[in-house]
Image (cartoon, rainbow, N blue to C red; front, side, top):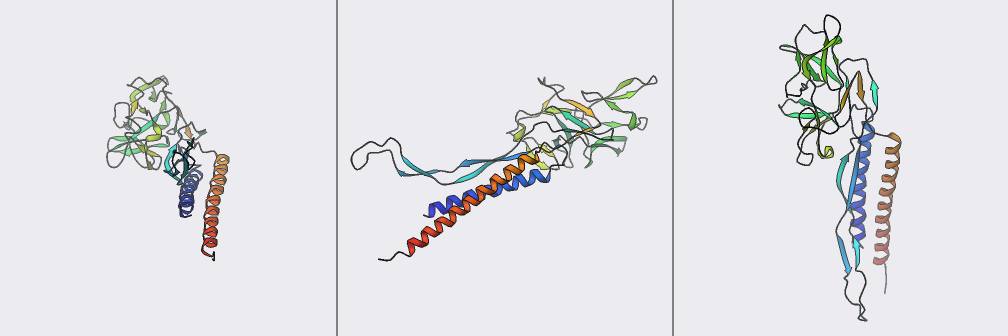
Length: 271
């Protein structure tokens, strides 16, 4: 009887993690560049009640009698599907269309990656620097910070769909100014390490970052100025998943209650 208690308890623990994941999705429904997460489960070991041997009548049994010992969380997977694009009034907002990531340098000097294109022109020692809302410098295709001197007007800067920064000449024709925003892809983006604030770090599971500029990516991404990529969370889907997880939690709780009742009845048996 104790087996059923521990099995049901493992189900409750796993479903609690699933509810936590769904709650995080709903909390980030308005977070720029956020990607929906889903809890994946895996069954625990099975216990042999009767093996595939002969019975008392020397009859060969076709299958063994095994009972499972519950479930556990195997992973929490992010789905990097394209989110909807929302128009903004900022010239330094960029939405990525495709599988690419921006590369930025954090406070520790490490290169991290993000889909959040809510960028700003921050004050730097040599002029204006393209940076994230946290002040992390955005890198170009050569791994350098994008710094413009005071001769450029931010409102006049445009970008091509390939991420090249353009500035109008005397005839108002956009001309390259020597910077191109870097975009990187990963073989397995779901393997990226989540750092919070929409930042990711590469891991062995994600693979090394693949430069769209130099590494011959088959399907390159594009940038759209004046837009931001919204979260790809579907509220209706998350509500259905929440109800499913809640019902599974209740069923596991009911299994514990039933096992407790059966144990109570067994303890109350009299000769």
